[in-house]
Image (tube, rainbow, N blue to C red; front, side, top):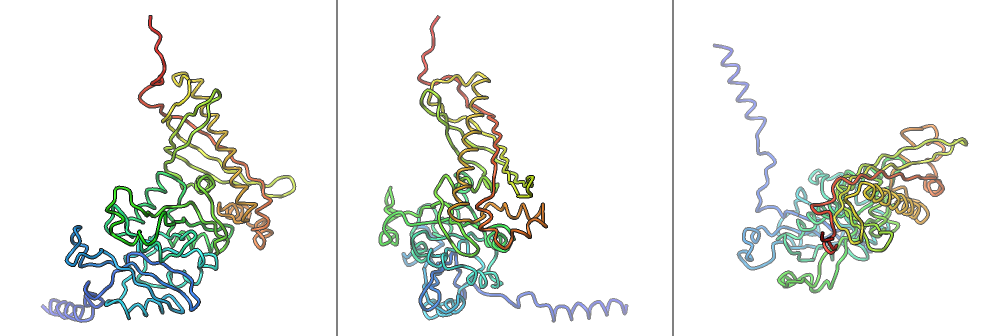
Length: 402
């Protein structure tokens, strides 16, 4: 009997000291931030917060007052939290950051360095680490957060989804999270990259709901390749082909498309279904590191615009060889471009050297950026064509009648 009484007392004490709702927050007390934009300012930082307008999100016909589903607030402060606090002079609720989906840096800020901003972002217990980070190419982050987008009712969700699909199917962009960026920034022997985004059209038209009521919107957000960082500073931009080369080396390609030229004119298109890359390093006779990037690629033929007979195994073998040569040439060229133009090891070759030959790495780590420019890097692609489609003969090929 006494055991039951003791248990009852313990349960009552536990209920008293472990309340379940001690940190609860009501939705009507919070301004749920979906996207953050950070720009440099003469007085510190200019922060833009795209806040969910909860009264308007329940109806896709415009909500109770006919306004947009989000509101973008802007403020300036010496630090990021200072700017967010100053937002309270305009916003009726406290900014709540746990649902941020996208963080956008203005290009001017990115070129000055983002480590101070990331210090706050990493320290804030509200922010998760799975949101995507972007750089506003040739513009301000605040402009990106003012664009009304099609398909998704909330612009931040549209930007988030477009990053996912373009990285998965196009391979010229990158879905980089806070955790990935900080890891590459702090890891010895590698530099980070971030995807770029810019306005395609007029900002004035992009801010109006009329922009997405047209069959062809006047202004859209467009992803623009990768921004190359050296340490925490943006040093330049890569176009589509070199951005794809970086993603191939980083093993971040799921699907993409390409083509090769036929000997007698025309092209053959192919789609990549799988791409795996492994990096390695060896020491030559002089003890100098020499790197290699080996690619294993599975592809399908998806367009034949030249007179070849793809039913013959020898023709398939020749196509595989031509695709391999194109990969070897193009990726080698674009690795060399990044080496010579930026001296930024966004591929992580220094980390490969650090892991395999730590004693050798000690000789290079203090000046790896300069040493990386002179390193020999070999690319070796192995391509296998798995499918050629549901037809063999060309549509316009004449059939010999008996």
